[in-house]
Structure formats: C-alpha cells, structure tokens
Length: 150
Image: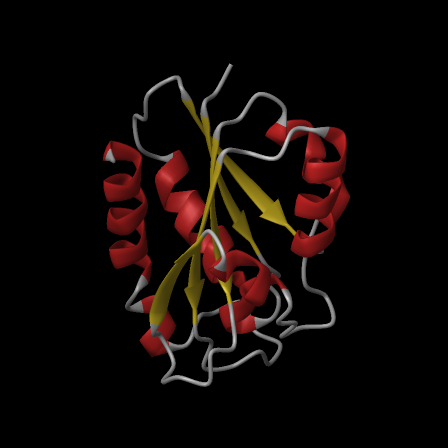
C-alpha cells in the first residue's frame, strides 16, 4: 500500500491548468519506490477518494492564481492549504476542497498535505502550456522528488 500519493490535477485542454497533469506524466516515467503512487487526477474530483485510503502524505500539483508572474511556484502546507483550496481558477477545476473535506469526514485525510501551486499564464483552450509554465515542469518534478526525501 502506498504511503505517499502524488496527485497532478487540472484540465489539459485549458493550457496552464494542465500543469499538474504534465508533471505527473514525467514522474510516472521514473522508477519510484513502491511506497509512492503517482496519479493523473485530471478533473476527477471525488472519484479520487479511493486513492487516499491508507496514504499518510499527499502531494498535489495544480495551477493556482496567486496574482504573481506566470510560472511562479508556491509550496503550501498546513494552514496554507485551506486558503489555496478556496481559490477557483477554472470552471472545470477539480473539486479538491470537496475531496479533502470528504477525506476528513471519512477519517482518511493524510497526515501531511503539500500543494505545489503554479501561477498560470493562460487558461485559454490549448493543449500546450505557456512558455513560463512549461519552463517550470522539470523544476516541479525535482521539487516533488526532494519532498519525497524529507
């Protein structure tokens, strides 16, 4: 059973909203320990509850509007997570707040929740990330790998 779940969320049809999915696609190609599960959460919402069972650490990668320059990465944990969850940037966005609230209600909320939020440059219809966000994908992979070693 995995101890760590890495979840990339977002809509790949809306340009930078798909950054989390692009990061997990790269992570899925790596040889990670069996205690780590990497999932493309896309826009699945509550369907992701099944992956939280028995997980002690959840790492989420998602686009977030921090009102910062495109490509800016922010790491959030603890009390900063609810503030992040209150931000909606896309009408097709995963219902991450509902997912985590439901996990709390059912007693499967992970001991540690870490979110890597990335400031999008565009949410227009496109399969491509904008250059400032695309330039951060490898850095995000490295940040997630560093987080796993903590």
